[in-house]
Amino acid sequence: MEIVVCVKQVPDTTEIRFDSGTNTLIREGVPGIVNPFDKNAVEAALQLREKTGGKVTVVTMGPPQAKNALKECIAMGADEAVLVSDRALAGADALATSRALAAAIRALERYDLIICGRQAIDGDTAQVGPGIAECLGIPQVTCVQKIELDGTAARVERETEEGYDVVESGMPLLVTVGKGINVPRYPTVRDTMKANRKEIAVMAAAELQACVRKPGLGGSPVRVRKISAPPPRAQGEVIQAESAAEAVDALLRKLSDRKVI
Amino acid sequence: MALAVNTEKRGGECAAGAPERGAGEKTVGKDKAEYRGVLVYAEQDRGKLKNVGYELLSAGRKLADALGQELAALVIGEDVAGLAPALIARGADKVYVVEGPEYGAYSTDGYAIAMEDVVGACRPSAVLIGATNDGRDLAPRVSCRLGTGLVADCIELGVDEETGLVAWTRPAFGGRILATALCPEHRPQMGTVRPRIFQRPEADAARTGQVIRVASKVQSGDIRTRLLETVQVCAAGCNLEEADVIVSGGRGLGGAEAFALLQNLADTLGGTVGASRAVVDAGWIPAVHQVGQTGKTVGPKIYFACGISGAVQHLAGMSSSDIIIAINKDPDAPIFKVADYGIVGDALEILPLLTAKIGKMLNR
Ligand SMILES: Cc1cc2nc3c(=O)[nH]c(=O)nc-3n(C[C@H](O)[C@H](O)[C@H](O)COP(=O)(O)OP(=O)(O)OC[C@H]3O[C@@H](n4cnc5c(N)ncnc54)[C@H](O)[C@@H]3O)c2cc1C
Ligand SMILES: Nc1ncnc2c1ncn2[C@@H]1O[C@H](COP(=O)(O)O)[C@@H](O)[C@H]1O
Image 1 (tube, rainbow over the protein chains, first blue to last red):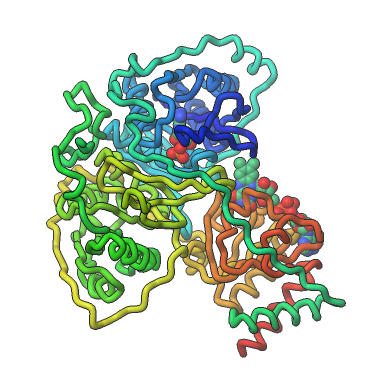
Image 2: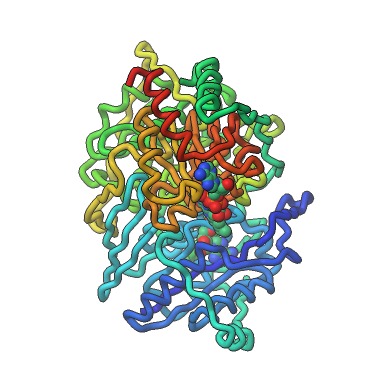
């Protein structure tokens, strides 16, 4: 069983910087963490490997320091790591990112299952997983909370608005996972130190088989025109009252004045 | 300008994704101006249209009118032609129907083929899709297949004055910034839009429109996933995305038992129970109830936050509610910064009072 996990390094800070020239976010210099859902993805892969054997490869696309995210995944227990990194990929939108990652995955010898996080907490787009699946021409199931493999088929639970669906698929298959699927393990200090010494293969855009003729910003249909702070909600009021009962009465008066109830 | 629209192949191509098969960005050599009108995907579930489809018709109508173009709707399902009049009454000039037993359950593969075909047939300038679970599964698959851009989870739509393009506005970084994006060179311009952002239009039975059936091109083997079972975790009507009233509880409620108090208030108001991540993690309530960045994004008319501190990740999922009411012991809790009305006090004491008094008001 060859499992590929796509992990993204996302900024850990509330301090958001962006380049107003190209209207893209500057990731250099902002401390990064592994996207929380992607840790769930790695954990899911490790648990499957424990059951079925095989190999877990983590792939990321990002600037050179995204290596640190891969090392964290290696410390958790991933076997191999690939960093897709190239200046030409800067400014990639979800489509360009999907294409580049799909090309990197296609360059691997084999893949049976690809696991992505449900969404990256910086962009919040939830597009890259389905995009990779489309580029590779393989089926997808998104928002998965449980994965069982039996030989050549996968049986997964997909979150729905009111519960979940049980879905069966052949492989190769791409799934995206939510945080409900597991609790990611913490690497030991020893494994972290070992992972830090690991060499990480770097793939440049030119090496990507599918060479994304126009990688990065040039191959990205979506252009950010403007970034702004969300309008603050109007300052509300805290109801002052002598007792809980009076506070409730006051609240209900206000709600019925506004014809809410 | 050449367009990167790939309508010849389905799956596995993703325009520039597969040069070993000789594909670069496929160009159809057509002018962008050939893509006209707005197409709204009217999602249905077991033969019933979801509210978000109606909401998108009102957003789509405004866009179409601003562009001086037509508004079309698309419905895909097993037996759904009967839904067309409702869509026409709410603003659609045309309704595309793709029907067949193969669409009885949602599948990415089947629905993507249907949507791709309709986009190929009607060449819309913009496609609006509800940001539901299925919508967010389908839209990126289709946009990637067409080699065009997609803006996910929008909360505002407009027309960019300078270019006449659709201006898609969406939150990012857990709601800390809003980004407005355009898709200048590729068609169609695609976006998913959050439920409950737009009002449902009134039905106008006098409106007329055209119903166009598009033959299903799905063949056996195209749908590679199989739905084995649908499991409902909570009682009917726990769809938070479509709820008018949500009564949410957090760690401040002290334990799972207290959620009965939330349920009572929710029942009285015809609402749904929500929760913070802390209580989902504690196992007090199943994850389908979680509101927030890693849970559901909701926008009810009234949101009660009881014993919830108001962490940014929670706010990211509920701050577009019309009215927020917070009940918290701690006067400095951040939830009071976003609440329209706050009560400083013990939720365990206030909830039963509130339920009883509202019950009396509503005669329940
Ligand atoms: C990557 C990431 C993603 C996350 N995603 C989400 C998400 O999607 N949704 C989410 O909710 N959280 C999310 N979180 C967690 C979030 O940061 C908070 O930890 C969580 O929202 C806190 O839940 P809470 O408000 O119930 O608990 P607490 O923060 O512990 O707050 C409890 C509140 O109850 C009050 N209280 C205590 N007793 C009473 C009483 N008797 N009556 C009234 N009030 C009382 C207290 O004053 C306090 O304000 C995420 C965190 C991370 C790092
Ligand atoms: N640059 C990237 N490198 C590796 N994986 C990524 C990257 N961007 C997105 N992903 C994967 O796609 C998922 C969804 O990301 P997004 O579509 O950006 O919300 C993430 O959880 C990752 O698994």
